[in-house]
Image 1 (cartoon, rainbow, N blue to C red):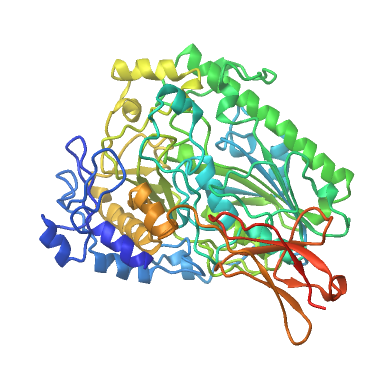
Image 2: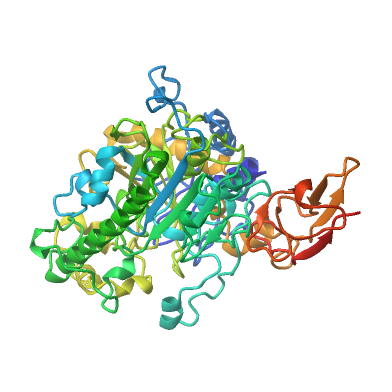
Length: 631
């Protein structure tokens, strides 16, 4: 189903705008599309005036091969994977290289270790341990010196909520309907600027296939104490079975049994985009604006330098917060039994970082410290869809088949993929559709809405004090060639960048003859991924909700109420008519919910009552039911 849907859409994918179009098959009218098995006339794509069409790729890239629906399907079938959809693309020597081996600590991986996730908002690798001389980050630098530092880790998207959907499920947001920012919480800033900003944009929850779970629920079922402090923002309401505690007071210290292993998440928001706003309380000023490096796509003005310096000040404050958490581990005697992850949710919260599909928006720092694991640096290619499987692997659990990622560490570690895939879609009320693929060095970007600028007119981002200088830059047509991405009102269909020779990704190589073969290879991988994962971002958003997420429901479905079934052996089991529902239960008077469908006999004598609920992700939860064990 997913493959047929995406192949058909890919066949007719061309977006009219500013006189530029991109088509993935040759041919002209609906007859040719129908013969190719493509999209029928009238298959609209979400945007102001986009239409299904076919045509040539464009005069700039006449020699590139194109991929028919059959070719896209065949390429997708050739895509190697470990399980689920995989993060791999077409075959690469690294996939089967006998030289690859999993990293294993001296003495092997610990059994049921504690796991701490420290996530940081809106931050690129602006750290001393990544070679930034301005950053004042002694605690993260020390953590990196004790652990493994990843230099090729990537968010799946350059904005938080879709990225967090990928983190919590291990699935591409484009596969589960979570790619738009956001699905059910309109931006107040956008509505204040234009009360009609969200006209035609539905409010909904992302709804994965029924087998998908938030991975901490699997950890809880395996005996882990799971806490989240405190951001969720998953594009859907998480079932109450996901966390033992989620909120401002959640902590590993609250677990009732100090011997119980824990998975604890702490989200640090001091580096968020809003931390540069004038209305936000300033952190201590420790950065000299004269010392910051101004990226070539920015104008070098006092306002730009001041915002960059304030961003570094916020990073220094984050570093102190990380130190406090690591100190608590030491105080509790847990540092030697806890695996620590430190990473950010996407790139820096500044224009052309956050919301941009370039490395400035998706390349993230990642440090992992594990007891007995030798410190070092690795350039292994890694995506956010890999972090959930990795935590499960470290806890001794295999990666479920519905996850798209692969474990990086632990008992179930798998080889690295040859490619990482990326996407950027609607940002608040501003429509876009962009896809990208990187092999760690080269990045190919496909722009589906070429009539949209890169610098989205997102109302919330106008709070960053350097925005007036960027608007002035665009008005005067830029100061130097490297600023073309900031001033152009349209985008080319394809962009190719070499991060080794062009770390800021400002020199588009897509039309260079010497890169034609590379463009073709990356493009085939990208199209194969879009086809195989059934990219829902190719559908108009309202159509996606009505036909893919909530078909035939007339609105958001409600999860059926759970029932209690007692078998011949006396075992009591919860059942729900809604496929894929998470089931939770508790004894009367208890707080929190236990995940699972099998109730322990030792606590439930005949005639006892339990409270239970059911909740499929994306559906409304059922009512809480009071059920009686037959006696």
